[in-house]
Length: 170
Image (cartoon, rainbow, N blue to C red; front, top):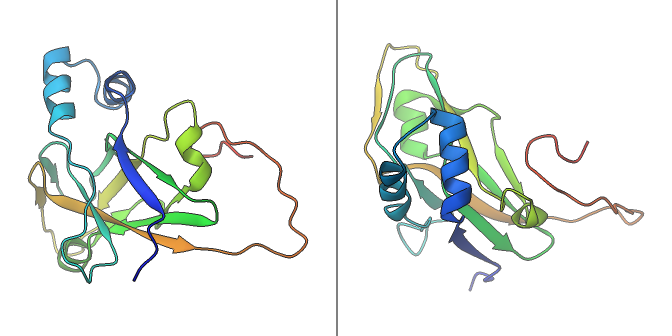
């Protein structure tokens, strides 16, 4: 049986509203609250699935070459020595060449404790070479996260403390 090492949560409404507004500009608070309330926690589709599907908080349309940054509203608490690696859903990558802009998203265990509540973002691009438009319905899986255990070197002495996301450790 697989180890149970993590739990998904929603970020607070206040954090989601701040990040949503920062990403998409001013919206009615009532609309942001509706989007927030409909956010689904990531889940596996089958008992044999390795990946936890992240669901689109709103409908997304990406024409060839277009990019969107998505505040997922999700955070994850996990044991030390584990990482959540995020990839596009296999079918979207295969059919449409959907790409994560950082190739593989890495969510470290200490990100949960950041000032932004460990809010997980996804920046995706329609990198099609066939002129295909990607349409992702609200509530549809677009990204998957896989938990992976990792090791460190015998002489490791990392003592830094994270506070933030991209580039926060250097």
